[in-house]
Length: 150
Image: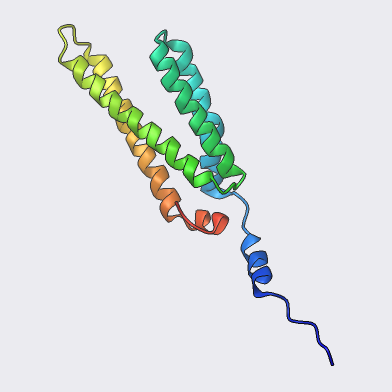
């Protein structure tokens, strides 16, 4: 009466954990935005500037956004790391926008339209970073897709 041992519990639990829902809904929208729309916008900004520093900044933002969107879309385990990198880079960029706009406002030849435009752009950037962070932090879709939140 030899009976085979029961299957290990770990094998069953791994099978259950590997069943995840596909990327869809708002998560799909954010993946498209991070992978396609954001980098296209950054490349446009790169073409409008002659500053090597700004070209490097826009290129870095485009690259981190693209990678974050791609690994999120593919549901790769490093997605949250890349999302944090992309969101932090975008937030730092917005902070520097505010800093340079404030410096420009104190200059002798202040261009108030430039200052308003930079402050508005920085505010929008900070708002979008906050939306993305809170979405990835509290979304049930992210929880179901990845098995956890950021």
